[in-house]
Amino acid sequence: HSPTHTHSPTHTHSHSVSWSRQADWLLRDSPYSEGVAEHKRGGTCWDCLRFHGSESGDLPFVPVSPSQGLVSADDLSSCDLTRLGFISHIELSTFLLALGIQTKRHRPPRRRTRDSGVFAVPLNSLLENDRKRFPGVKVPVVFQKLLCTLEQTGLQTEGILRVPGSAARLKCLRRDLDRCCGEFDWSAVRQVEAAGLLKLFIRELPTPLLTHTHLSTYRSVLGVSSVVHQVQALQLLSLLLPEVNRETLRALLVFLRKVVSHQDQNRMSLWNVSMVMAPNLFTYTHRGNKLSIAKQREEMEEAVGGAHLVRLMITHQDLLWTVPSFLLTQVRQMNHASNQKQFGLTKATRRLLRRKNDKNDRNQVRSENQVR
Image (cartoon, rainbow, N blue to C red; front, side):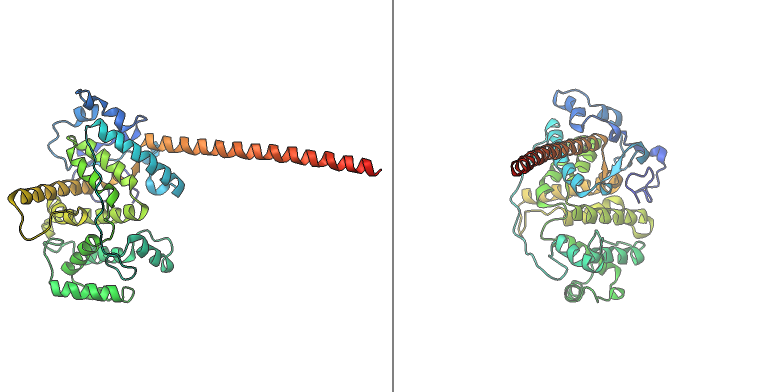
């Protein structure tokens, strides 16, 4: 499924397209940061005015047709993705600053890293090993296996992702999966156990799925008052993620949307799924058995805030991987400038070589004349 298709395969709710909101801001030539400049001056932003008063934040913003010139991040080369990340970082910083949002960077905590096995192994290491057997794979195979197991047998299971399995059984499965991932018997894994392994896998990543670099920025998006601008900020953040993180997050969000689409059977609404998954994606610093009332309240606010972000990402996931027109234009301009520079250097080099060859020819003719 291309993230730029007008219709999603499975919407979070059974809304028709007429009940969706067109994400026509993707086609603008002006950056998001210019569009929210009125916020800083105390004026009214056009997007906020258009979507003000919408009581349902779960109505998906439907991407415009790819025939209008939009592309997915998947369609870009590695060089273009590097340039896109550079431009997106500048735009995101300017965008949040225009909205009056200050971002803070925290020192990443030390986490246990392993070189082999499945759990606590960096995504890049897992993917590198998988590509020896499956060239071109973009998401770690064990992660795909967990999602596949849940999709095949767990979408209709009541309380899937929420009901915990046996801790002893989960510990045993984790040990077996670490020892023999390639020969692991997935048929013996029950739905609640697969859900537990999935959450454990995400939680124990040495680098969070949303990365240490951007985790605090994700939280700062909660300070944005408009849903449309929160979605725009999440889109810019998604384009900043490393490829393996972006593809793994995409696979997770697609699966979570399928879970919500079966909520009549599994009793897992969009908010239920978001509340369950948020603690695995957003790590919280307050730990311990005894917490003050203030700390408990702070943890609860962080959990609710994280669930709100997960809900937005599930609902509007088709937009997260779409490159806005103004970013695509800037990438093309950078490519053009690079090509011009390369062409200029090549031309200068040819000129120097031509001069050198002409000089050698003259010296050779002079030498032949002297011999004669």
